[in-house]
Amino acid sequence: MKKARLTLTALSVAVAGLFAFNVMVDGSVKGTVTPADGAVRAWAISGTDTLKADVTDGAFEIGAVKPGTYQVIIEAKAPYKNASKEGVEVKEGEATDIGEITLEQ
Figure (cartoon, rainbow, N blue to C red):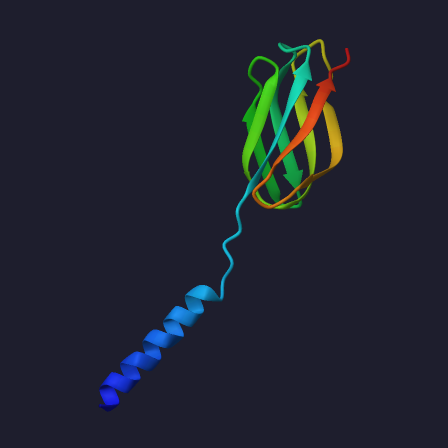
C-alpha cells in the first residue's frame, strides 16, 4: 500500500511538472530586397542570437526566430551596400514581414 501511494505521488509530481512549462513557438522574419539579385544573405541579430538565411530571387525568410527585438541586416553584393533595419519585433508563432528593403550603391 505504501509503495502504491509513493508511486502515485511520484507520478502526480511528474505530470504536474510537465504541465508547468509552456512551450514557446518560434516565429520568423521575412521580406524582399530590391534589386532582386543585389543581396546574398539576410541576418537577424539580437544579443547573442544570430540567425541567417539566403536571399533567393529577392526574397528571404529567416526561420526559428525566438520572440524578441532584432536588427535585420541585408548582406549585399558589390556594387551595392549592406542595409539594415532596427527594431524588428518578432512575436511568438508569427511571421514578421519587414516589407521591401532597397539597396543603395
